[in-house]
Length: 252
Ligand code: NDP
Image (cartoon, rainbow, N blue to C red; front, top):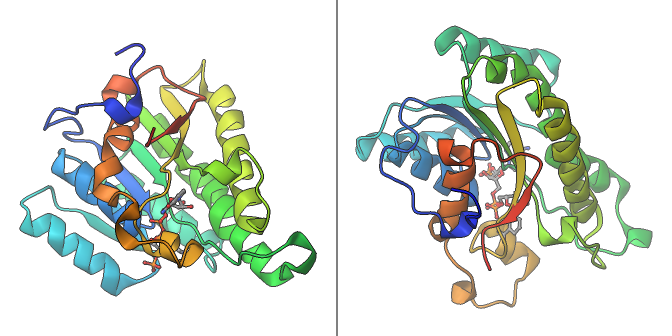
């Protein structure tokens, strides 16, 4: 698989057979598509989000399609405190005894505004949900990821997390942080674990967040989340074994 572009990957149907993968923000948009796609390729997916009602809908879609029974973890990443994270880690440990994949996907856009006028509360909330919550979740789940024979941690980046862009405020800064967190963790796990850590930038994709960021854009100007899944499947599955510390794009 050397030299492959993740976006050109062609997964086999049973790629994620018997893997347990947790997806944050699985209730909508790209996270929902990733959860459906991972399940369709054989994974048992832990659907994490803040709305039980929306997660149940995704759960039912997966079951109706005949894929492995998913689990639901209701956790509001803006509000959750330590015990809620530890309960989740215990649920994973007690049910499966390991975790094979962790997709950090949940995020808030916050407000598009100049730094000079950026609301401080919004800044803190966006940094917390997009970056600090991913750090805490990674920290509590690392023991279970270490127990996998082939684990993948995938962070969701953005073009504005690699090159700063006016008015993208806390969102852009949080994504720079996500890239940094992934690099640091990749170095720390490279030689002494079977865990790989990478970043993936979906590129403009047709979701509620995209509509909020670009209200004037035609709805069909961007691909559906389901169209960008090859890169997610590549980085989550065994064919990316040994690939760590990278930052990839779903779209050309
Ligand atoms: P959406 O807004 O469509 O979905 C965001 C998801 O995150 C939803 O499931 C949402 O839950 C969840 N979420 C938000 N806040 C919380 C919280 N406090 N606790 C738990 N879950 C929460 O966004 P996208 O699907 O577009 O984005 C997915 C990822 O891709 C993000 O990291 C985003 O930054 C990134 N991205 C997206 C691009 C795009 O063009 N769409 C471009 C570049 C990067 P709920 O359903 O309850 O709202």
